[in-house]
Image (cartoon, rainbow, N blue to C red; front, side, top):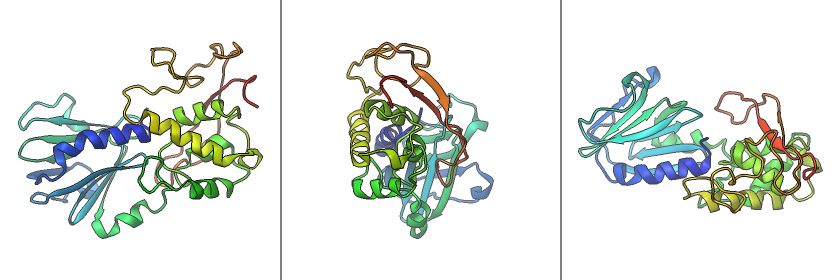
Length: 265
């Protein structure tokens, strides 16, 4: 499931392929941007911002969001793609490689000068150099009636945490995901632990929150509905938390939540 760490790793994979290289061909297979041509421009940066990937040239910023199905693959020039061409949304080709974005949930192309406005709705990036914990806490606290899991998933509060981390974070803090933000005594502690979790996993192939990097033992509650809680053996419960918006520019989605009714209050 793509979260901030997934996009951080994606940017790291694409950086040596694109950054500092001249684009010889681009193809934006989204009607709104079908006429955009960045051939001849040099890619100045490939960065992650929360769950968003940013590819930047001197004139233009390209933002993509994987959502659930999207991915980027890299091919040698002329190499046959391993996914159907009709599923490609963006092609960025240099003399040495083709980076192809398949099934991307969102594609946005704006003048470089408009990049800041495009990303302005996002809260502090948990993996960003400009991480600001105090601002994240302030934004969370501004909606005291919102369930904690919903508030943590709202990218306007802090950018990068997704369902896996939020469920695991709530368990580790002993808080049910349904509890209103205003009833959480130590929001700063929640935010700090959330960042520690994702930083610890940003370069791992598999997310680990239990400290045990073995299949089936890496997570405390996420995806374990009906299974016994690791510390107390009470069956893990599974539920949903409405369809409010998670991100100002993504579609509404239900929050699937997992919790231990004994360990989390």
